[in-house]
Image 1 (cartoon, rainbow, N blue to C red):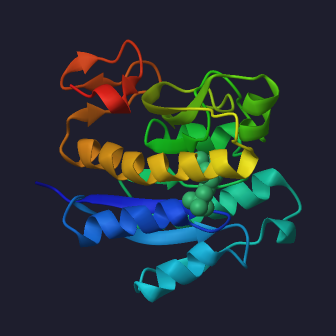
Image 2 (cartoon, helix red, strand yellow):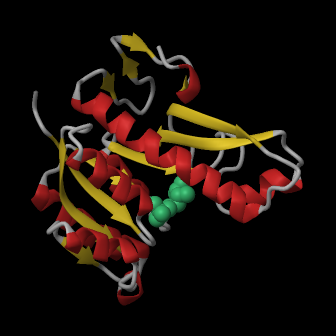
Length: 216
Ligand code: GRF
């Protein structure tokens, strides 16, 4: 089985990156990470990468005159690496349409809400403010419209009266760390074929997101 090659884009702690690294180390994911790229030079995820001898690249977006120039630099670096897949794991920059169209459908993102609910930021607080009974995590194909591409997999959990934004974030992270390696492994096994319209899972069009708690 061919090894899936990844470039992981981060901006922060990189706990999802770590979950992917661990899944590779444990033989649960047949993949290799060609590089980790962060737009934030201080991102802890860069240190996680260095500790594993994965090339860790920092491109500070503040050093570019425009979004387009930053994205072109990013695209240039990634094009040289030729990964099978771009994995957005806490990458906190909006990517330009040109960049996304260049790599689509081979870009995945993990988003801390049950999409289409709560696209954008502050998802945990917004779920609390709306008194939602449940909350969760979505992994989706990236398309030019923010947090709107086809959702592959969702995981959910109940919101308890005692929850606050921090506890919801913790619950989301626990799920994310199990979900992201799994979706990547499906791609590596060719069980999942990405598309910006309708991905295929086990050869069948994915009509709705798969439920992490009720997998076929
Ligand atoms: C995750 O909650 C992810 O859903 C969101 O950003 C966070 C990244 O966390 N897109 P980490 O850097 O992987 O720890």
